[in-house]
Image 1 (tube, rainbow over the protein chains, first blue to last red):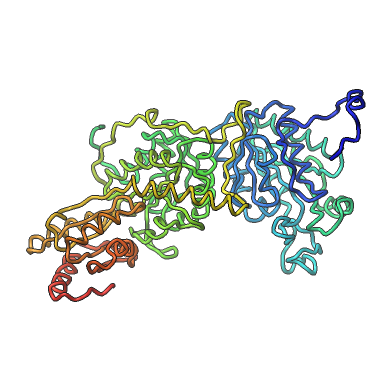
Image 2 (cartoon, one colour):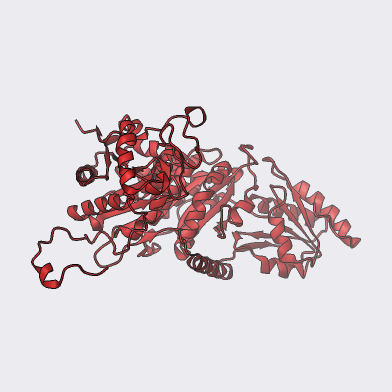
Length: 257
Length: 363
């Protein structure tokens, strides 16, 4: 990319953003407009701001964010599909003074990994679970997910999801919020700068609670999938607000008393 | 060495795990191995071990993945149906080259099967079990003493090769009580540095990543070639077996684990009848002692493989023998343990057949 400004012009400008050391120089492979890269950046900025890069270990899932470790400049483990929270449990139990988080999509966390998700939360495992919900299997080409909305068309619900054949979209975040081992639950999005700021506040709280050994923190990020939804990035974000938010409204779901 | 104690095989194995410096155990109850989890939940926790009863064997094996990846000496145990559930995780662990111990106290199958002892998991244990090209190092104890001894060896081998190690036992060895002495073993003299572990990235090094994903075919082939080179080294270095009266043997019995002990008794009984019978007992089932069995095939007239299954290790014996002498099979299934008298009867029939120079029927 050619520089638009010359050096003397650059020198007169105020520096308002520096990519933190917690992000590698690798370019994101995500589709244009995808929320993953923004979510990655939000988490890694918080890790940088808290100064915990050396103490943080992440667990990547199977799905589009399978390569999260290419972008996050921290020690990471790649888990089998659905097993990220079990892997995170293993790490946290032997390294209790480290910050451990899992990063999982809807298929990973709420379908194939449901048992691991529920039991990790029920044990109150002292980790952060980040749940990316875009209501679709992106990496495998746009199949129906456990959170796919009723009537939503995917490659495996071509006429739209129906209750008769596929049941209801699973509100797993609301389910885990009921478990006493879970300390903090919050739902967010990354479709506007303000939404990202709110997310970063929740992430910061979650790492603080983890330091205080309060139990499981669970953050859902309602995200998009322009390619899977067959929309432009702008359309996808509008569709997200109009269709995803009614069922998955942003906001804190469980806060410490 | 400690004083002699009388213990169940499962308990001896669990006690050895504590003494071997196992930091963390993750497991799920299943008969006939639940004593391992129970012993560690009590005695292990008292002595500082992290012990977690997981929601499933699927979770257990993935907790092992996480703990091993974080640099801890770690293990799980289960029995056949539970070990089947762990195959996905074992494939990932083998690919990511994470050292750990997995104990299979084999029970009868297929399916839910029976809680009685069996050796039906030989193929699963020695040939990979899960998807892809990989091997576990497999140790087969045949006594309560070895249930304990092999734990130390397993952890050391796992660390040496960054490879998962399985102790393939059975329900009888797990449940029966025998004398056991615990060896002098100071874990601090055995634990190795693990600079690859994900313990948190200091400024002084790049990020450590534990993964089995290599999307570029050339990279994935390189990983496979590296794994295969490691397996060749293991095959050259780590083969273990035991022989009983093979020096003058005309008929060779081949058996592992519990069956090897019964075969030795059968060999003694057969020798009382004037038949020169010896026993080869593979201790490492992977790597398998092909070369030694091939050598013995040059000095015996026939081989009888005895197993508590429908004939699994016999395939490796035949691979070793390459048709030099007839290789027969005798097996019991469903949790039934063959008695020495049954084996002697087979030997007697075989001896008669061999004298007539007739090829043995396979089964």
